[in-house]
Length: 235
Image (cartoon, rainbow, N blue to C red; front, side):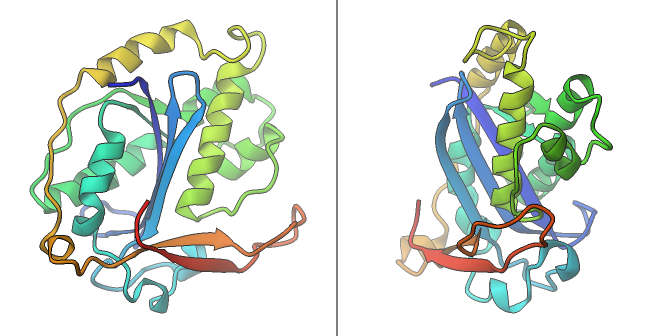
């Protein structure tokens, strides 16, 4: 199994993994040198109210026809397996994913985790705060579609690279040497397998629905653009 990182982000119907549901999930895959290897993102039908639309900008209509978590769970397991889990306040994303998998009877294994919020505290002392938007701005990484799972995951991956490769850090193009042990540990963790949902086996799987910003360019500080929903047969 190749070594690497899974940068995750979820949007949810509320703040509690026990009482609320994931309504959008994204994973950005990086190899052991932080180079992109692939992406996965979709809206999810939470089987109930979508929650704070004013925050994540997901309406009830947006999730009509979106897959349930069980339908995308096999793909998520394949992408997460063997990788260090990365997120901005990663324990929050991990808790939501762990609870969603528990609901379908799949216990997630304990894996090494890397939090870009923690990294930013050491690498971006000039940041006015340590939320993702403040860290991205302090690092000079430019605009991103905040509070979309894929936008946040991509920004987190960029922030990870910035913190890992910033001087006086390791040689250009290589993450710190002390990250090698978690990579090896993650690669050795056994992960559960999960068959396709009955709807997928019978050819009735609902397509993934990805949110992307409308075509730009967009000005910093100019407000969030409209988002385009794209139905995908698979990735």
